[in-house]
Length: 102
Image (cartoon, rainbow, N blue to C red; front, side, top):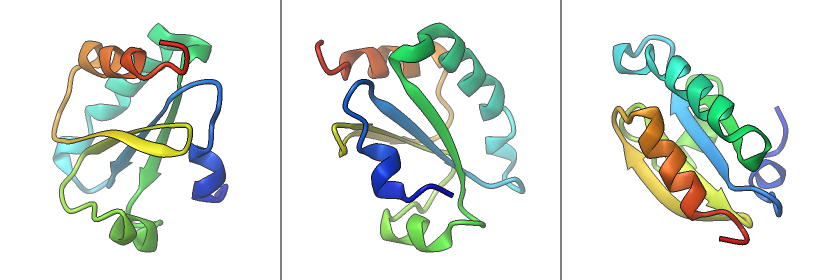
């Protein structure tokens, strides 16, 4: 996996990170939501899924306690975080609020 610092140090678009686990029932529908977000925003945002079971040190460092957890980074800094199910439209709105020129 790409180093996390490089992943979030995006200068052109906000980065949405979804922390999930394959065994978590609440995370199962998130794939479709993220697909819709990516389709709606195209190259205006980066959407990344991170499996906490394969990236435990990162999940612990970021204090991911509940799933699914969504985090938006802009210019390498966390600007928004939410745990629990969200609709695609809500995520799109949050990403649009954190566009570098908006």
